[in-house]
Length: 151
Image (cartoon, rainbow, N blue to C red; front, side):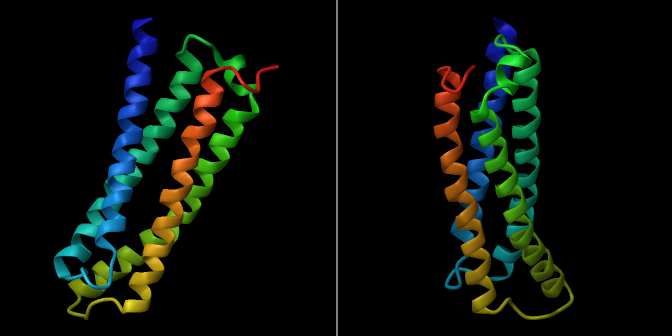
């Protein structure tokens, strides 16, 4: 029982961290707010976001292995596969803004200028798509936790 609670806590903490940092990216990634410090900060925030996403995945897998319901219960449920598919989609979508933030940081460090407004808007669009997809994952999670989709 204690292990189950600790695994759930670790998973929730990782999820909350991920949500905080994607929200930070969305807040900073605005043409009217971007400056040199924001460009530097976006790279760091994105790195923490990526680490948090990895922690979400690892703690989620740990819950399926060592959790009370057991691996067969989780992995035979289509809702878990839906959650994973959404998570993978978010991860793939995150590649574009991550590369943009890195490019902006390198450009700034090399003495170049700030990113163009169109690039900032594009990065924000991709960040917002991620944020909205992340918001759907808990819907599948609450139904999964209540036994929907079990065979």
